[in-house]
Image 1 (cartoon, rainbow, N blue to C red):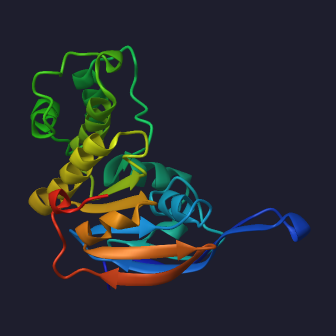
Image 2 (image 1 turned 180 degrees about the horizontal axis):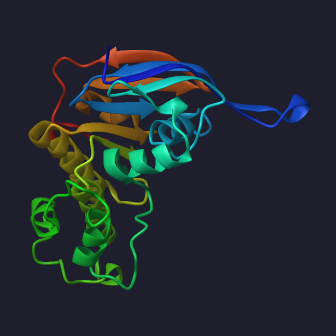
Image 3 (image 1 turned 30 degrees about the vertical axis):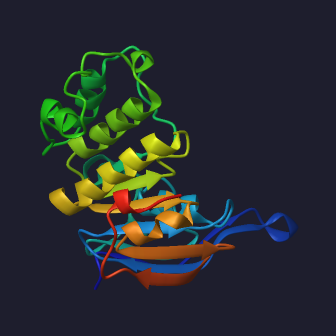
Amino acid sequence: MAYIEFQQVVKQYGEGSSRVMALDGASFRIEKGSLSLILGASGAGKTTALNILGGMDTATSGKVVVDGRDVTQFGRRERTAYRRSDIGFVFQFYNLVPNLTALENVELASQVCRDALDPVQVLEEVGLKDRMNNFPAQLSGGEQQRVSIARAIAKNPKLLLCDEPTGALDYVTGVQIFELLQKVCREDGMTVVIITHNSIIAPMADRVIRFRSGQVISQTDNPDSEPVENLKW
């Protein structure tokens, strides 16, 4: 069994004529320690899938297995514990606490986890050794996203989920963020899943999962994934 098994997952909103199928029997697999991209147009179901995988939403039907556990069977408390201990989230907008420094933002996340990493060390690893005591307003967009990634990594999660992590960034900074996420996967062995609409970066991933209209239309493996620095878009 793969590390992540998404099996015929349906997510329905509303009933009758107002029914919306955000996911319509979506299925995919992801191996442990890999970097996977979920690609698709707006409304294809990418974020819904990520939210269910991360325990922020529940499926109408189907099965989601992560590390041998069926996430779809979790109650509210189990989902909360799962999000806290197993999942690191990185969003397009950084969601930092504005009146806390970069270090304090990372410490905030690490305090809720049993096996958290050292916040100072993690910030150093993401290139913010000299910016730890700055507040978010004193940081560039790329630096704020690095803090967001450091906050997620400091939890020492099993799974790092990233929803359009470079959507608010310029090209050069976006490249740096993708390089950082690839580094986290390759050097730390973390399982990383990235949602993006940018198909040009597909060669950086071990697996590319394409969504359309709530369904997975293809899964492609890259046995020789490319370093982000080699890609141009």
